Image 1 (cartoon, rainbow, N blue to C red):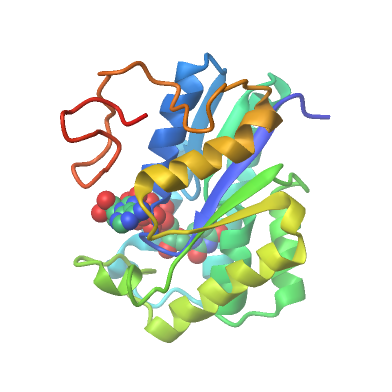
Image 2: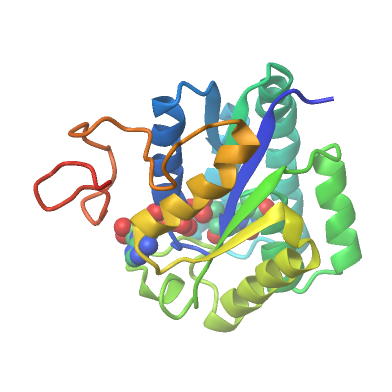
Length: 238
Ligand SMILES: Nc1ncnc2c1ncn2[C@@H]1O[C@H](COP(=O)(O)OP(=O)(O)OP(=O)(O)O)[C@@H](O)[C@H]1O
Ligand SMILES: Cc1cn([C@H]2C[C@H](O)[C@@H](COP(=O)(O)O)O2)c(=O)[nH]c1=O
């Protein structure tokens, strides 16, 4: 039985998961919520080495099933070493990618047998499911295709990334109570506000304002230069 809450950010490559993780991290900090930010693949020392293998274009033609098993190994280690202990401590855990990435990329993207991939994902995570998945949705022609230097997964075809997107949307449609689906090319701040609005009641945060950022005016976020978090005068937007 977990005392904590597992929130997952999902979506295709370059849809803005890291950006939204940073907003969320700052909001949780601002409200004094004991939380942990992590990601897959690469949320453990072993996972970091698996991630490097999986994403390096020099790894070349990794067999599809070998790829699925490497992602599964990363998950198993991450659940045991990081996710379960944090949830048992009662922390709010925010994870950049989780099971749905396996179902979407290995299942739909690589066209592996869906039931086998589901079983592998369940087994590797020891049945640990997210409390909420935030799916950032965008046409990969606008996101993945625009990446200048691509890793091994990002280098897959547009058709591959379209299958991935369609599977993410299908997973969300099957279980709408556990998903928040947001258009990934809306403004960064409006996406962050929608995430906060959904999470506040789950976390018992009384924001007072739906637009609450959890940040004091004038505290600078560590978000990239493309961010629209700060207003024209450098202060936080309300
Ligand atoms: N809402 C948005 N609208 C337009 N551009 C955005 C938005 N959010 C983030 N970006 C930009 O898109 C790029 C990718 O963002 P980010 O790194 O957050 O995505 P990601 O999903 O974490 O990527 P990856 O798949 O590599 O992990 C960055 O240049 C970022 O500034
Ligand atoms: C967890 C997981 C990830 N992937 C893919 C998705 C991305 O292309 C990369 C991870 O890169 P990011 O910069 O962290 O987004 O790996 C996957 O295919 N299967 C998975 O289970």
